[in-house]
Length: 311
Ligand SMILES: NC(=O)c1ccc[n+]([C@@H]2O[C@H](COP(=O)([O-])OP(=O)(O)OC[C@H]3O[C@@H](n4cnc5c(N)ncnc54)[C@H](OP(=O)(O)O)[C@@H]3O)[C@@H](O)[C@H]2O)c1
Image (cartoon, rainbow, N blue to C red; front, side, top):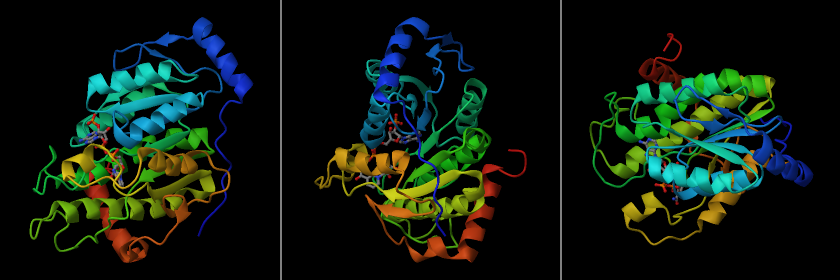
């Protein structure tokens, strides 16, 4: 089921130095569709979108990518934290730009995707990392009327990924990394919006399983196009915002989680279509392999996001 895909290449150290020099001399300040000036990627510079990179795991991954010389599209809702991450990356070999979008709104996800399609000629890696945890233990509803975690953690990345696929295809070899979790709960097809027996844990787990099933679908659809798709559990209870809200003692470091995400972004040794527990492939929840469940999930997601109907 897995294929080998060429690795993502970052500039060698010498090229990074050149990039630094050219950063001072040659950075072209473009005017993006969002209206804010940003440093255009230099010739050959990798462009990587890390959703949810204003804090926690995504922030650490974004900083590491900046150090490797990439142009990082930093995303989240909090503009001040997003700009602080951009400033930190701008002090490295890389460059960055912040784009705001609330994943509880499909309109904002569409705006984010359109800004990227309008402003960039390449997208080497899409890291779907943004997420909302299991706390508070309360059924929340998105702007579009969906169960909140299902939309923020799964439906919005589904929509974003579909909208960005043409650019990933143009850039191939390229990659999609879906930051999921070992916390996976099956979708109840009688009640996918979890109207009954709600718990934050179940809602989070359902959204994370859906991400993995989506990854397997992507792999099957994209293996001939040289786009590698993988999902992972980065680490257990890293000291991030969502774990703090849950009130549990952290058990792993953000560095451990970032190592696992970075492997899926840069390693030449891995194959697509897999679920990783940190650095090692592992079997995901059985429902992620069930073709009938995958078909139902795909159809539900297309209907809810408008993908496939011109949405
Ligand atoms: N922490 C762990 O131990 C752990 C374990 C397994 C998996 N994970 C996964 O790792 C990923 C990163 O989480 P984290 O632990 O780093 O948590 P975090 O510190 O709470 O970060 C979550 C990120 O997602 C963004 N985000 C949250 N809600 C959003 C929304 N409605 N729209 C747009 N962006 C939103 C946040 O940005 P703003 O605040 O700017 O909106 C933030 O950048 C998640 O997918 C999570 O499920 C984490």
